[in-house]
Length: 299
Image: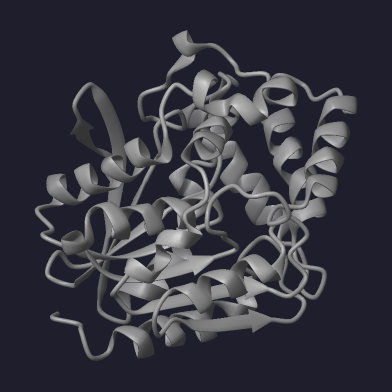
């Protein structure tokens, strides 16, 4: 797919689309530091087969979108609780980026599907730009930073594992880094598709080979944005909350909080699912999205 560009003031956002242009618009929003290619092509095609036009994009500070390297790399070990003072931007800016992609596509509104931090960005988009959102699907996500939603034990395990491993500064090293992370974050009830993760990580390396601190700046943006839970009652669109019962990063109670706060939201918990989207669950998740959107689809 050819990569296109959207603009949010001085920020350039890279995106690409799947499916017929007259389908039901669905925008995919990825999580912390991961590029849009981490949305599997096969999942995108499964969605287009059900009548959606799918767009995915690189969040700012990742992939082919604008990086904020000049802002430096926050040391969240000491700066987390003053993230508002060290953040180069907030998740509100990243929600505006999502709207900029919709503008570039000529979409007055779209269904949003956000993973992990992408789910928080999707919630903010619905809150800040309600007329632009038709429905929300949130997976492996939470309602913004609050102690207890994210497992700091898993965060530390990741930091220690990645910090102690000497990865080569090449494509193979970048791929191994992702595979090692997914061995910690993946679903204990489903086989890890290491071949796919190596391939997607290799493509990510080809697109953006150098670590530039974007992960820490996006994390600072999350810390600076704060807790959205008190505002979620204002979301008036159909909402599907998908979460793994065995997610080691975002605790299942974080998903239950969202489902309880958003009027009419549907919560689907999958045993054995971790902080990823196992291929075996795609048909069921796509069915859930189609059932949720059946009454509001215009395509």
